[in-house]
Length: 457
Image (cartoon, rainbow, N blue to C red; front, side):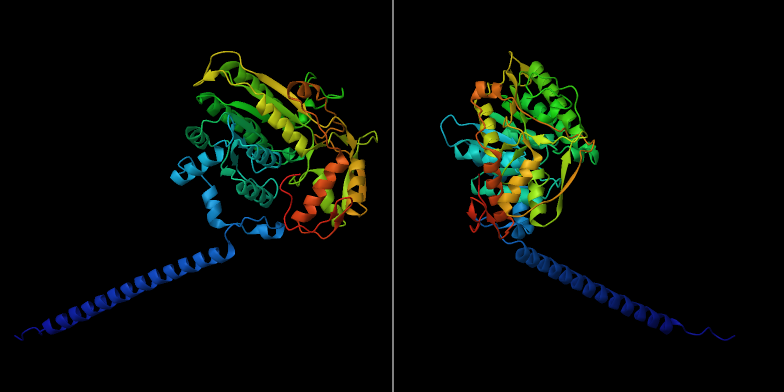
């Protein structure tokens, strides 16, 4: 019988070849891992170089609008904070909010990167008060303008914490770090017509955000006094003019107005239950340098310069629409007057210990001007004829006529508007052409050739 063939050599050869294949695979895998690591490192270095070149450090000067499309990536990351800010963040917060004058206020300004908020923050800081800003830099209008205001305030050592009113942990952190004496609450979802597109944003900011702020303030020890922005829109369908604080406000003509009216009722509740000192300010069509691009005077200026037609509204019965245009400096004086005369809250740790101050005031100009007159003034300042498109006012929540009675504000803290529309618009146009780098002349204001926009009017 023949013996079976010897296969041991074949098996050994196959084992050896298998070993070589595994060894080769291991070397390929190691080489691939090294290559992947080096490629990742190279990409990271390229990204760092990219951000370094495209996001240069913030300078002390405010550039024109075109340069502000690129803001510092690392600086933005530093401004953005959560409740766990860290030692450097807390140091910045404390430095900004510490008063420089004796018996100065320590004020938390919400909406500090906004139009009225930035002006009030600057005015408070310049007189020696401590100011800390809070803003979420939303995109309701161009955030680039808000970033420019932020940069202006930073030059004056006003730090803005980037965060939302509905972030309760962040608010509590701020109150843990700083014993604020006052809150100037100006953050809100603004605009009458936008409410038809995004109603939830008004409820989230103007109602839920306000309640969240009051919840944190009521628990603070000591409780701060609060001055906050209501609106002349609360007068709604009221036809009795001039509007007085005693007039009815139960017929809002827009969701925006309804949320502001709700805010006034909420303020009453927190004052009654928790002893918070609360002052509501009803603003009347505020305008001026660093203003809001969604306001008529602002986009009229833009469209006139660009040769585009503008819509000028009339009422359904062919009457002119008129507004009580109020210059920003007058409004700032009113806000500071309200802060200076605000009495202390009477609660502590969420418990009321006695009756607290509750006020509401009109802050207007007391001199309504037809919108057609505003257009005529802009035409003269810009030396350009507007292409007017006169149309009927749509039913979108706007009211045809506003007129403020400010007797109460004058009596209580000396509020007295002093800037007429022609003077205020000249200052606004001078700022506008400077900020956007437009080569033109402003009548009675001379040529616009300075390097930087006005810091304040």
